[in-house]
Structure formats: C-alpha cells, structure tokens
Length: 185
Image (cartoon, rainbow, N blue to C red; front, side, top):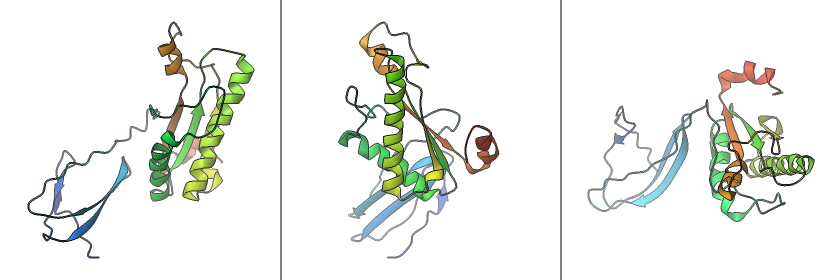
C-alpha cells in the first residue's frame, strides 16, 4: 500500500491526515513513550477516530490488573496474553530496550515457598515474552521477591490481592550503564 504520514502532531499527541474514501487502511502508531497501536479500517465518509494507548513513565513500574495467577501456580492464563503480547510487541519494535520483571506474593504461607513461586511466575512471563517475540535472552531479567516487599499491610483479601503482583520496568537504551550496575549483562 501507500504510506500516509501525519501532516502535523499537536501538543496533546493528536494528529490529522487526509485519506481517500472507500479505501482500506492499516494504521500503525509507534512511540518509545507509549505502547504501539495497530488498527485496520475501511474509510466511509468523514471519520474521526479516537485511539488511546498507555504512555510509559520509565520511573515507575507497570502493574497490570489482568496479570493474575491461579493460587500456587505459575502458568500463563489466557487473560494475561493480550497484555503480555503488547509488552512483547513494544520490545520487538524497540530492540535497544530491556525489561525487568519482578514477581511478588502475599504473605500467606511459607516465605521460602512464596519466594520460589514468585520467581517461577516471573520466569514464566519472561519465557513467554522471549518465545513470542523471538527476543534474545539477555534483554529480559526476572526476579522473585515473594512477600518481602508488600505494597499494603494485609488487613483484607483486597490488600493481599494488591501485594500479589508482577511489576514490569522498561529500561531505555541510555540507561545501559545504570542497568549494568544493577545486574544487567
């Protein structure tokens, strides 16, 4: 097809361009500061589309609500795959970026078992992303912290759910020197 580029980018991140009515298009929006958006559509008359993506704050870990494991298991659930696929696509589109995955559990049970479970879960996610994106193994590291770093005191089941999490940190290429100091190879 014919490549159509945006005529301008507004300060709020929106843009506009003209297309021919009755044609089919594939739109690809990429940025190192946001997750990629892909959409196919047929143009019928004047059209305004609103597509949203998640911007990335590299100072904060990404925590997704649908990354939840079955009790005492580390297998990837089908509900997790769309989110993991978005992370995979981002890494495939940005080959100089790296990813750190940190798994956590709530405080129920044996701390050593929890640490191993959290490590197994982080490893499962790492393997899934590497396999799906055909990524080099040195781009992703995974760690399990068990219940050692809770976000909340566990007074309720909701508090425990908050502590059962996986954190993703995308590391920009210019962070390579600091990444090496924290264990990146």
